[in-house]
Image (cartoon, rainbow, N blue to C red):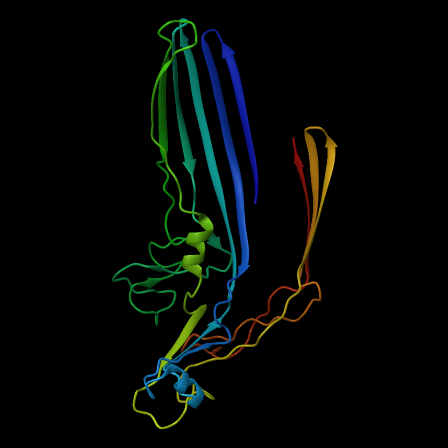
Length: 296
């Protein structure tokens, strides 16, 4: 994340004018690894005891996620404001202003997001269930929803000093405020377990069965694809440097996949695609980032 903010104050007569703005860039690169090794549920439906079902190898449910867990999202946030403090003599002060914020949604570098629009059939993924839509479909922008652009927030306040000696004051204020859902939270909700990019296979085993499913839980299940595992080593180094009493800098070095290990992405899992079950891409190799931060 990085941002630029600035404020200007101008005093003229009985007015104190303030103007300011902020521009911020947020980016999230994360691997939301959800249940890649699978898990079993034993509830005792076969023997009457969950522990006995476990020892016999009779699970009731098996669940495993497949697909690419990597997300690369970014967004821009803009804000501007203006306000005036007006002194009406020695006893009354008025403060009024206006603020506007624009918080577009996070977008994913490869558009691996989805949303739910009831009754709409996706054209990007025609085999998707009705209502499940993706960036590029009609009415679906890259962030899956349109930014709210009318967040104009007025504020007004009044201060009255009835005695004129500064020891007693009466204050009143009113304002309209907006807040946004945390971008990363909404971004993860739209991107994690978003078929066909990252899907969960869940198998519920029948009550009437004579064979244990523990050894091969996906036996007889069509279109189940297993992907490769991976290992990655990351290193971060930070150095804080005090320049003066109120000035300091921070040097930062971050290295991802230091050992440059091969990390293949998950096989294609789109039914009907010519790449179903094939690995056609790999994650980035070693990445080194350098950064410096100056605070005052």
